[in-house]
Length: 192
Image 1 (cartoon, one colour):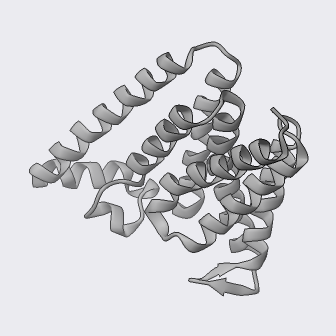
Image 2 (image 1 turned 180 degrees about the horizontal axis):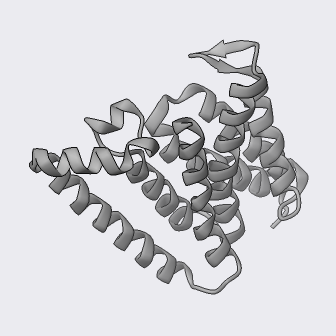
Image 3 (image 1 turned 120 degrees about the vertical axis):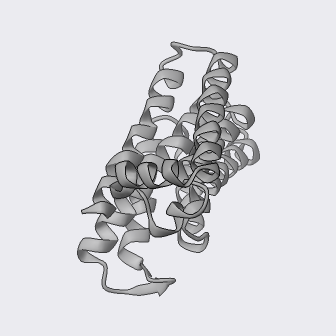
């Protein structure tokens, strides 16, 4: 149950690509709001770690969304927000939004498919089926917005990153890897 609650929480990460992607806000405004969210989260993290009672309360309220490691270390949401920030900062709007969507949708899909039907373990308990589902769903999303080679490069690099990078840190590395893959393919193939 907790695993699926975390995956649903991940889907809330679609807020940034929806608002930013629909051009309701500028890059600067998106970076401002992401930075503000980061600062608020870091204040919460500081309070949580400075006061044992705050830690107990936080863990009680958010336990369904947290892995055990997050109860004694920085919350994965911190890495998620930093990944969002880097995607918006480093990549064109379309690529940034897709890279963030890859994290929200791809990681969720990999967890659900890998947990439900995954049989072939390939690395650290992750399954071929989950990784393939990650790549496929990301490609199918991206191909509507960027040329197919860029969609494929981003999806494959993001899925590989999700497979190889451990737990909390994939929230940071997936959008960056996806953005590099898509931007690199677009640049090398001269699409934009």
